[in-house]
Structure formats: C-alpha cells, structure tokens
Length: 429
Image 1 (tube, rainbow, N blue to C red):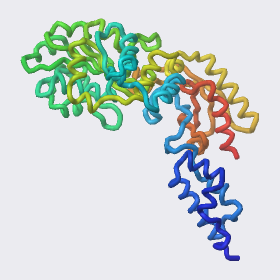
Image 2: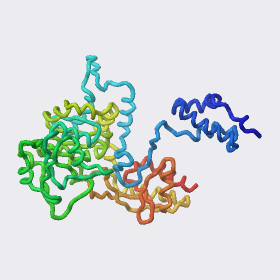
Image 3: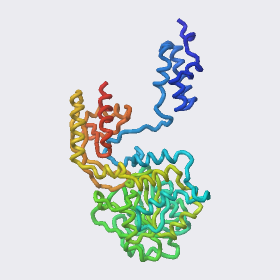
C-alpha cells in the first residue's frame, strides 16, 4: 500500500477544529511543524492516516512557553532553580490585569503623565514606614549596582572583608561593585572587624560604607561585626544590602536582617530582593533617605534598570494582598505537615507504592536565613522515583537523602497534595 497517497493535506489538517484551536493558542508555525512531522510518520507507515490529528494534538505543548509548572517538594522554600518565590493568587491576578494596556505611567484624572508605578511604590512605602522614600529596579543586584554607580563611581566603597561574598553561579559582590567604576576598601579580617577599622578607612574619596548580609553561609567562633547603629556617625552614607527582602522582623527568622530595623538603626539606604522572603516578583528594592533615593532615581542608569508594568503590578499585589505562599510556608505547622504526609503516604501504600511519612527538615533557600532549619514532614519513596517524577506531568522535584526520594511538604501548598499523589502513581504505570 502506498501510504503517501493517504497522507491528509496540510490545509485540511490545519482546518480541523481541534487543530485550529491549537493554532489560535500556540501559533501557526509551531502547530504546522507538528503537522508536518505527523505527516512524515504516515508516509513511513508508522502512523495510520486516521490517527494524524490525534498525534498532532498529543505532540503539542499545553502553552506557548517552554517553562513548565513544577511541584516543589524539595523542602527549599525559595529554590533559585525553580524561580524563587511562587506568586500569590492576588499577584497572578494582577499580572493578568496589567498584561494589556494599563495606566502604568498615566494620570487618568488629568490625562497627563503620571508617576510610573505609583501604586507599587506607595505600597512599598507603606510596608516600611521608616523609609523616607523608595524606588524599585529589576533585581537585587541592580539595586546595588545603581547605588554604587550613583554614589561611588570613581570613589571608594568601604566594606568588611568577611562580607566579600560570592552567591550562586559564581556571582561575586566585589566584582559587581568594581564593575561600576568604584574602588573597594576592605577593612578588618575574614572573621573580625571593628568600628575603628571602618573609621580609619574613611576619607575624602569615600562614597559610602557598605554592609552586605552573608546570605548563604555563616562564620562562627571567634568573630565580630559592627552593627549599623555604630556606623552612622562616620560622616558618610551607610548602605545595607540585606539581600533576602525581609521588610520587617519575622519570629521564625530572628537573626535575619530586615529593612525596617536597619533603617531604624540609622542606615541611609537599604537594598533587597523582591522575589525572596517578600514573596513577590523579581525586583530590586531601594529604601531610605529621600535625598539618596532621589539621586538614584534620577541617575541615567536607573532608566536601564527600571521594571516593567507586570513587575509593578505583581509587587503591589504582593505588598497589599493576603499572605504569600512564602509566608504561608514559613508559618506552616509541623504537625499539620505530618498529617498531610501521613495521608498521602497511606493513599500511595494502598496502591502498592513503598511510601512512608517521615520527619524532615526544610530550609529557606534563595540566600536567606543561612543555617536556619524548619521542621517539616515528607513522603519517603524509593530513590528510583526521583527521575520519573521529574519527567512527569506535572514534574515533581524532590530530594535524595540516605537512598530515599523525599517529597517534602513545607514548600508545597496543601491544594497540590492531590497532584503530588497523582504524579507518584503515574510513575507506577
């Protein structure tokens, strides 16, 4: 039989209602590629002509992006490889509202130009009353770059040697600062620094003193550091990079610096990330003295670092809306987590899966609260489940510990328990 004579025409396949709907959703080029590939399988005799449309639809992705939602069962609340903080339902709704034409930089009352992102900036200012002014750029590193460029290009930044940190993917704070044209003046030793070290280093060329939160490690033992309150009388601005984006003290993270406290102790400027403990979109937050924030906002580099309307919408909703998934995960009750794990494990065991509920330990992640352990609970499976879970739909990312695949529930919302259970069962088929 000559299968070539039975290959449905491209235009006929594209006109099929189900395929046409896929074109509307995914775009004609992607769908046509799937059609051409299916037609080739018909020619080769690997696919019956009647199955071509079904084959095309099966080959197409659910959305026009290659990014896929992943169930985070790692026990790391802010997993950088998973995009850090998951957005709240309010923030997701705000993204949809801002996706079209919007009044991001328009005063609807006057019809004239308005302050860009006024709502988001007002929400940030309300969240940290100790900040005289605020500004937002596109990520935490950008906030520090803008501060260094505007306040210390061609001048010196004084900082402690123990705060010359490297974070993920080889990113080093010293390299970032030097790239702005500033010079670094290191003070103290790796483990100890005194106020006198800072005072001795300050001179006419000093742009500012910088304190950097060592967000992904701890130095213990014979150590000393200088709190912000002791640096404020040195005659130059004090900039504090708190990194993780905690705006106010949190009872579960007593040693994590927060913007409100640092400003109250005398910091002139605080920089932070929006997609970590704040639980919002990727953004760089700048909070502090009105004169300094204005200088940063009016600097030419600020234009290159400005955020888009989607970030502004999600940030405002994060700040004004209900508790974020990150906040919920931080406050999760270990007993409740254990009951969830027990229920999931029992349901899986009833279907023949080697599953048990075990105590677990979660972490904040994302460069926040190093060393802090959060009591949690997990579903323990044989290690062989890890790979098929990652390859499933939806993908599930757990962690391997002592030869078992642990699915930690601390970072997983309770409404995803059924999906997690279904993903595990799918690995058995």
